[in-house]
Image 1 (tube, rainbow, N blue to C red):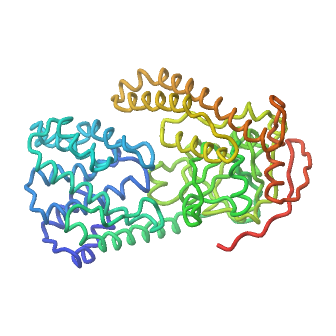
Image 2 (cartoon, one colour; image 1 turned 90 degrees about the horizontal axis):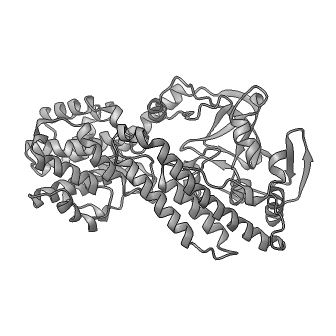
Image 3 (cartoon, rainbow, N blue to C red; image 1 turned 90 degrees about the vertical axis):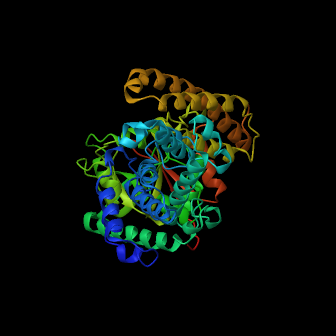
Length: 487
C-alpha cells in the first residue's frame, strides 16, 4: 500500500489527483480483504493494489458514476481470488466470479444487475475478447454498453500491470491490445510504480534474508526427468527468473523446487538426523550433489503471504532438512550425480513421472514437456492421453466451482478420482519413456532399461567422461565438467 500512497508525486506527473482522490485511494487500499486474495508475488496483494490504481485513474477519466466506480474497484481488487497458480489459466476468472459475492457486501449489489456485471467482467478478464459477448447472456446483462465499458477498464487495468514482467517474458505488456486511449497514457506510470515495488521488495529482502555462510554439501532432486540433465550440467540449477533470462524451458516441478528467486535443496548435514526431504526426494530420483557457500532457511512461523511479500523462501512442505540457495547453483558447484541403491537398477517402466495436482495447467505443462522430449524418436499416440486429460480437467472444474462446505464433503472422492486418472497418465508416460530409450539404446522389446542405463547414456550423449563409485546409500557419478557457455 505504501508504494502507491507515497508515490502521489509520481502519479501526478501523469494525471491530476485531487485531495479527495488521494483520500479515496488510501482508504480503499487500507481496507483490502487480504485473506481473500491469492497468495502470490505475481497475482496477489501487490498486483491487486496496482490494478486498482490503474482502474481508478481510467474510471476517473471516463467519468464513471459512483456505482460503477464501486463495481470496478471491487473487480480490480478481487479479480484473481479464484486463482490456484500463476500460470495462464482462462478458468480463474470464472472461479473468481463465483466467489465474489462472499467477499463484497456493498449495498449496491442488492440490485442484481450490478452484481451480474461485476461477475461478468471478472469472468471475462481471463479470456480473449472474442468471448466477451458470451457473458451478456450468461449473466443476463441488460445494459450492454455499461458492461462493455467496465469490461474494457478492468482488462486494461489488469494489462497495465504486465509492466512488472521482464520485457522478454511472454506475459509482458503488448501496448497494441490496450482498449482505451487513456490507458496508453498510463504505461510510463506503470513502469515507474512497478520500479518502486521492485525496489521496496529488494530492500525488504536484504533486510530480512540472513543466510548461513560456509561450505555446505547439499542435494537437488529432479525426480526421473532425464531431459533436465543436459540443461543442469551446462547452465547449473536455476531459479525461475534465471531460467527466463537464459530462455530455458521452465517446466513446473513436482519434486526439487525451482522457485521464483530460489532453488530448494536438501542440507547434507541433516540427512542422518531424521529429515524428511532426503528420503522423499533424493532417495527416490536423480539428484545432484552440490557445494554452496550460502544456505537460506524458511522460518515455519512465517506465513506464505509474509514470505511472498518479502521475497524470502516459503517451506510449504515443512521438510526440516530443506534449505534454499538464492538465484542459482552454478554448474561448477555440482560435484556428482547421485542415484540411490533402490533407484539405480529401477526399471524405467516403474518410474513416477507425473504427480497428482489440483492445477491442470501444471499437470498439462509437465506432460507436454515429456511429449516434446520424446517426439524426436517416437510419434506418440495421444488419443488416450487426451481423453484422460479431458476427464481430469472436468473433475477439477466441477470441484472448483463448489463452495468450501461442498468441497470438504467431496474432497476425498475427488482426490481418489484424480489419482485414478494420474495412474493411467503415468502408465502412458512410462511406456513413452521406455520406447524412446529402447530405440536409442538398441534394446530388444521388453528388455529391462534401468535408471542407471539412461543416466549413463545421457552423459555419453553429452560427451562426458565419468566414473561411477558406490557408497552406502547409492552410486555417485563423477564426470569431467564441460565449459559453461558465456552468459
